Length: 122
Image (cartoon, rainbow, N blue to C red):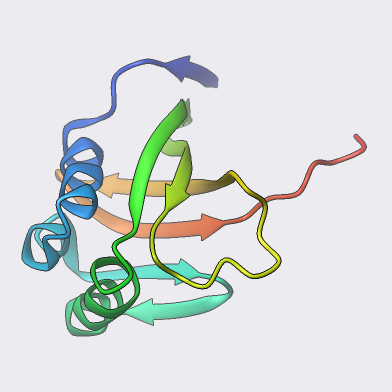
């Protein structure tokens, strides 16, 4: 069952705070060792690859996340956030809102998928 919630689960709140602090090690600490991230149709598997990805593409580009909506969908946490930073914004909307799909087990993120969704006619 889906429900809109107002409070982020602790590890998701820690993850977003670490992203906004540009703290690679704090970001990595929110993930399980065998976690994966899917960003822009790229799969990043394992803690070493996740560390390299976040160091370059989030911390390096000073990416920030401003949560706009949080949904608990059968235990999967969906966070729609406004993203900003120093990354290349060519062909992106003025306000970039992306959906982050977090799967959490035993207090750690085991998977994170980040998608720039488009409106659906349905």
